[in-house]
Image 1 (cartoon, helix red, strand yellow):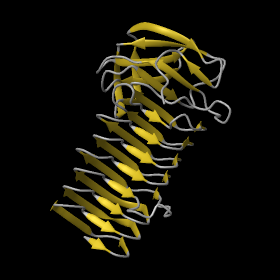
Image 2: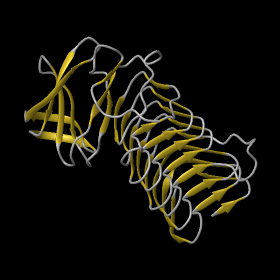
Image 3: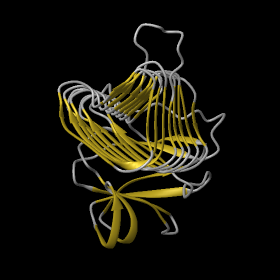
Amino acid sequence: MCSDDYVRIISGTLSIPSAVSDGIHTNEAFIADGGTVTMTTKGDGIQCEEGYVVINDGTFTINVADKGIAASYDTDTSIDPYLTINGGTINITSTAGEGIESKSVLTINSGNISVKTFDDGLNAGTFIYINGGTVYANSSSNDGIDSNGKLTVTGGKVVSIGAAAPEEGFDCDRNTFKITGGILVGMGGATSTPTASVSTQPSVIMSGGSANQLLHIESNEGAEVLTLQLPKTFTTLLFSSPKLKTGQSYRVYSGGSVNASTTFNGLYTSGTYTAGTQSGSFTASTMVTNAGGNTGR
């Protein structure tokens, strides 16, 4: 499907079982207010070449060789393409490209997003804002979430997995990384360090662990802070949550078990943890605590 102007999906079902290039290609805009879109392509899934992408609602299942959803430019670098997700359910698998890309600003306000990619899971040229929703980004060879400029998280639930060093779960090239809310779990060979001077929610950087191992953090009083089944072997973990409090001390456990549980891509959101082996401890003495792991680009 191709348009020199814009494509808007309001409702209904669109199926593209096999495309030799892009599934949907538009020059000025792509807007989705609902509907169900399924596609398999040898190029990009949804490509807006010189404009913007806004997804308000809808269900998208996108299997591609290149980029899943992209707001970009061809040759005119003066164009400021952006990509905004306000809702919907988006599942992207890419065998060679990025999952969701904006050449300028990428904003996620709500929705349920899952991207499994070869290249970056999420990428933006100038800024990534995550204000809500659930985001799962898993890259087999690059960063889980990569902003070439700034990165701000104010809410939502985010699990981001990068490849081995130098790739990162969260990467913003040493630019401002602001955390004021939400639950963030980033795994990879390294991580960008949250900017303590502008962040209002504490975070901790820790060394990694082995695939399928349980990682558990609790306060010295026994209150659960994090229970996570590690999806792969990695060297660095970044974690931030409203449950982390500055000035408090925490115990770290590996192994154990969880009963009567629900999870979001390995992140336990309910259940009862039975302790394994205590593997460490830390005190969140500052807004950003480094208890191990590698800080990168």
